[in-house]
Image (cartoon, rainbow, N blue to C red):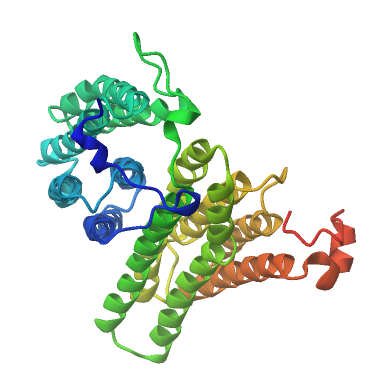
Length: 414
């Protein structure tokens, strides 16, 4: 007989639709704080070590959020039992976010304890909720618990060593955690999961990940406004202010104009929505989010120092942020289409960003000149993609289409 936990799961609407609920949006507030902590931490420790530490922490924060998104895709957040679970996860997530600036210092134990508690506790809750109701899902989460327990000793051991060794141990722990879905959580005695175990409401996953992109974009907007408010507002900084904001708008356009909408449509119609969500959303959104975090740091540096010498660290974040974003976008858009190549516009844009970075370094440009040139590359990429999806080579650039061997009648960004 089915247990009472049947009522904890969503009742799917037409086409398996699962709307995003208010408690999920409330849950995201913790991660607004987490993204802010990550960008500020990178700014304060701008260097190879700081970048690697921020990357490790970002991987952990994303894994907490995306696993919770998967769970909320199945559970009904309108049920009091599920709401309480999510609120408790928020509390632990707030602890995790608070520990980010000191995760490789005195509060490493706090970050590790919060991360492991969230990951294992939520998975055990799903085992309990699914037991006798969705046996395959219960077994799937038992496998997840097994994999999380494999990395647990590394998280714990990292709390008792210095920062350098902690980086190695926590990186190894995350490698295990991230390998789990790729290995279908193969577990002794329980076998491995299948794509059918991961069937989800694709539109819900697409919308949730799009909202996290908005959160990350919001960090750049907040940094731009807050930094500008504290600085002398002369003409040079007004221009830097406009460049930073319009750069964030260009990044928004590149993700939402075609990619987000098309991705949502594809995953909603797919009979392999779980596998598509694993590849396109769980993994390929990581460089997108990382790029936005790094871009927020670059915006703050540009506003503070629009003139003068471009330090290597400033050049790295100025070019690296948009480049990571475009790489993630390329992979995401490739995963949600059946085309053999990533978007040609994004490949051109990536080359353009690297070229601008090289010229800025060799030509001893001013920071504001670099910012304007990088913004121009993003606009070029967005316009190229927009044109290819609104008439394509046939309408806008038939000559270039023939030059690059693209079918003028295709009308697609390949």
